[in-house]
Amino acid sequence: MTLQPLTPVNCAGLLQPGCSLLQLDGEILLFGQKGWPKRLCPTGIFGVRFKNGEMKLRAISFSNDSSYLPPLRCPAVCRLDPYDGLPESYLIHGGRTPNNEISSSLYLLTMDSRGCNRKLVLKCKEKELVGEVPGARYGHAMSIVQSRGKTACVMFGGRSYIPTGERTTERWNSVVDCPPQVFLFDLEFGCASAHTLPELSDGQSFHVALAREDCVYFIGGHSITSDSRPPRLFRLRVELLQGSPLLSCETLDSGLSISSAIITRTGPSHRYIVLGGYQSDSQKRMECSTVLLDEKGIHIDHLEPPRWTPDIIHSRTWFGGSAGDGCILLAVPTEGRPSQPDVHYFYHVSFQQEKEYSEEEKTQACSQESTDYENSTPLEDSEELYFGREPHELENTSDDEGDTYNEEDEEDESQTGYWTKCCLGCQVDPNTWEPFYSTELHRPAMIFCSKGEGGHWVHAQCMELSETLLVKLSQGSKKYFCLDHGGLPFQEMTPPRQVIPVRRTPMKVKDRNGAFMFKMSPSKKSFFKRLFD
Image (tube, rainbow, N blue to C red; front, side):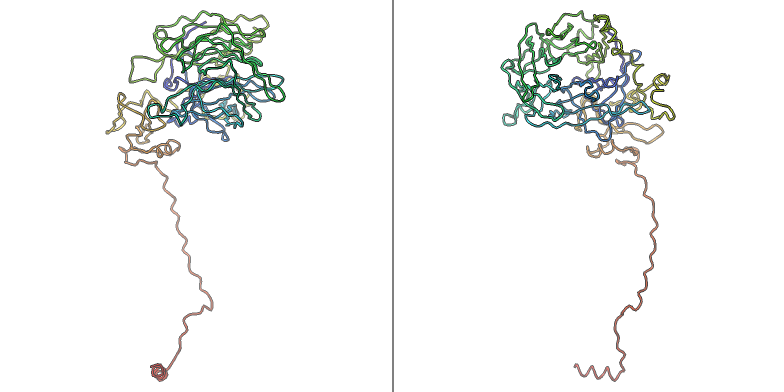
């Protein structure tokens, strides 16, 4: 077991509590942080790379037919292994948005393609549920169960806002535990059903959910009603019968008093490591445990934790996620810096030396537990297309030596910074700044001014840009000039091409009838004048 410090390369502010780490096609993905105002990552999903004690991120793009996936924090994330010809994928439900809205949507995230430039392209589709649909929530858990040749998804727990009719001014944004119902829905048709079990009498959130075949185990969790983390352990058995499913629940002993724990799988067998989490509101759980699921049930044993650093021991909070089999990415805040509340210390925790498999399991695990990032897809941000070369010819190339991707491709914070004086009348103070736009989280929104040789970044609020105009400018690709360089708070538009109008000569119409004129002599005119007078 190792505990290695990581140096983030211009990406420390993107990892915040509530984010999720996914693994698709051998790559580690960071989800839950919006890349805006960075133009190169409108999806908010980044590829995570560990190399030589550094952590780097690169933007991940979506296919053109993908649904919009908002940046969700504390959602329920469930991995779907390949089955029935379907690729590996992730189910994402609920979560909180940066605007403190709680989602009730269900998304399916899969790999769309990997072109000759070896860049990963994802595909996201929103799935519609019918029947007894679960409401908006966060802090819940989803698991996949298999019974009688069928596959279904189980959802339980979570928190949500109090009902609209019970809201008051003082309790408008208060959250409560969701009712202790178990939701079951199939992935093919999206039919959802709610089930109430007498053993699950209290709501809980931020618990651990582990599944094996037709059983799901719920460990720990926090209850708002009692403000406690009781050592609970439930086993939920799901039988997918031909008509309606049959659910049964059993309360087991030897549970864990834990919430917001980090789970990582250590191999092809159902063996997990539980790290982190909280025992109370002011006490972290510094211990580690191994959880093994087999035919007999669940087995929880104590595991010697890593040698924690003083920063980890004295920190009040921590968070992270699974970074592959037997590996965990751990983050603790850098306390004592009020001007930089979004900077964290990062550590890479590896439990690969703690494997205790049989010889057959070791042989199977060797082909699946490789965490050497050099064997996976490099994370270069080059647009070079390797013409004339097949994708399999790129696996053993040495192009990775020149892979120096970092966030400077998008925005170099060491040169620009969010808290620098952007213009003569800049009023942004890191000690008194408050979010002005709805898309801002912990930093002021900035926009790039193309004036000069290298250009510079300016605060959108100092440029007096409306939110609609700011979003329009950030999504475009044309140049922008700030107020100090031309006073044009809009993009530089290409002058329209001057089109010389065609001079059209009116056509002469033949035999056109004009005004009818009578030719009269002076005597006739005098006669008619006397006649009508």
